[in-house]
Length: 319
Length: 290
Image (cartoon, each protein chain N blue to C red):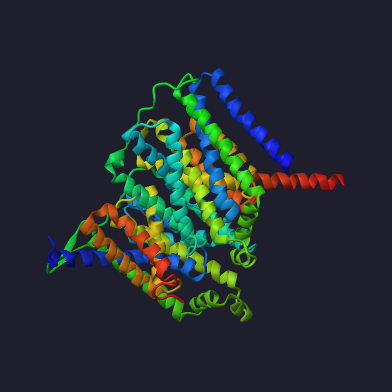
């Protein structure tokens, strides 16, 4: 266990340093933009999976948490333009609180009702933001990104680095949760909530923990969004794509481990970037939708599960 | 501003809207309310019906209602196919709560994307002789584009109600909802019953789609807004009660009509989700719950 943790920490550190080194060597800005989007989906998919995959509560409202982080940042930028880490922290705090609120809903709402409530949250929040003129209302607003940042040659490279670090951190959080008693408690809730409660699992605490962490991570992922897109408006920040992607990626990768959302987000996210350039953005959504439906029907355990099955079969032949 | 006529008009408009919502929710009340199939893609099928109606209306001048009724037949078989997949992949293995939900959400998204690719994101509308006309009874104005869907919606809910309570097959559906095992012991295959019921649910969704496009222009992404509405109506009315669905739909229609009259149409959407949340918190079994 301890050795595993050491290896994981070393890999995480290497990845963060590595992504910094990339920014000193690579010039093409398109790759940074594309990589940023993929990494953002690593965070979102991992965050979704903490609640959806581990605890078994399907969240259709990823866009609500994501956009909450993004719009908290916009409101702050409009008032006193704080440094990025302040945006990340406050974005995470606000969406985390929102997650906590949603967590209390799980007391009464289970299954499909919880999912519809999260979808409702996204729709209602979008409506409120669309009527909030300070952050641009329905028409949106332009956000000026800082001209320069120390150690990086431009702001896009900096944002890429930040998102890479966030992706590593969120995967590490998911990993820590999964390997601890918290993760086992969540799995018990997923399998049978009543039985878990009877066995003494603190189900309310764990559910609140899951919704809060999941929401906070989504909010942190959304905080730099306005700097990334430069012009932010509610339709794009609350787009259904976020909900579908952050749910499809773990489903395609596999929901029960930290590896699943990571694999799903990297593969599907990269494929989407390629499809958007070579085909069209609608076709890329069609591909995601078909993959999602195809995987839930034919490969319920995702790619990680498929890989495990294949390996088991080969091992069986050898024996 | 706050005259009696104003309130009366809002009330009548709300009741008319409610009849239309009954048509939207009837199919869901059947599949979700009675059979516990969480068909979140229901609004997507409604929208699909709207676009089929739009297509034949635009190219052949077919009346939208007739188009909806005709397309209901193939829609039934689509519903049967969807339920077969759902049953074999999820229900049989007891995985419907998480993956079944995701399956329908994926289906919802797929239909939306297919509609965007085929028809584009522009608003589409249909032509019929009654759209755009209106009549008035005393001080109350009645637009035919609202009255026709109200009428068809009311008929649809009534027919479904009679079907469920008076025919053998309808009673079998109610039987499956109450005790699936007992139905099985009586020599009826509950899966076959559920398949037929789900097919009927999708068929009514397509009819409701033709009503949706009569009421106003549609674009592919408005299905999302209707998820809240149809689920609010089914839950408010009480799962599995057709009378409840009708009453719930009328309540939602009136509530939305008053909200948009007094606070502006952009807040009307919050009403359905508000009703849904309050209802789930206070009385989850709904008004006419089983």
